[in-house]
Length: 296
Image (cartoon, rainbow, N blue to C red; front, side, top):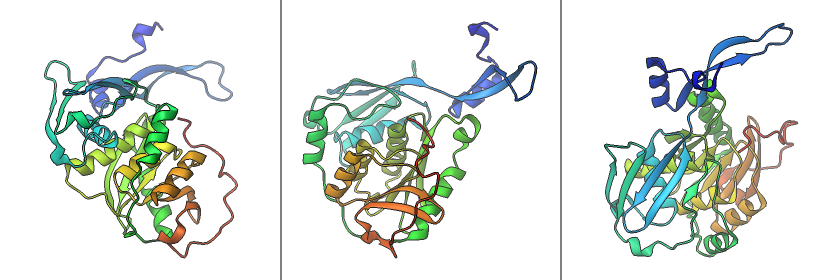
């Protein structure tokens, strides 16, 4: 089977591509089988999307090309180019190339240079200067959120249940913004953890839903940039199915964010500001707590 024939070019493929998936032909080996079978399969779509911010620059992001308007808005928000949706003067998708999004922001002069212009689907905020600047400028979240411990597992269980692309491909991350009752306000999937979070926050911005006083559930590791994005959105709680990094813990402590990792049914590690969790106490972590669900 040639490389040219590995991608299935049919109407079904076009439909799945619009949902962030690509149909492919593969050879699948099964245990005990004498010969592999050629079968149809689905993989998560990865594509370059360019966000052209007027008078600022072009940011090319490798991502799953769904909810790209929300991702663009969430990205410029996370980068500190805007504070609210009112700071976006215009947003448009190119008619000639739908992978190019144009955004005009209220004050382009406020944007501080230093960000990489090409951002991989697994890439975060790069460079020690960027990290130090982010830590120094990190806003401190409010203290309005308080949730029962059971909500942590509930929001992660719900996050898993709505990940359609991951269920079919095993290749995406997800993020979901939730309120004090554990109700999901927005949800998004993407190859990249950071992109999924930008999309989820961007959906809230586009829907004019307040993220202040809410939390966010994450399908992968809680890294430094994930916490900094949460702080920018005034989210008070980050609940991850996996591990945090040391720098994420430092950032969460400084920003006043409750950071939870290894969240399972009946278990959670609370690394910072446990006062937001009702009945927060110590639990023995499950045996598989160190197994990473998704690698990047």
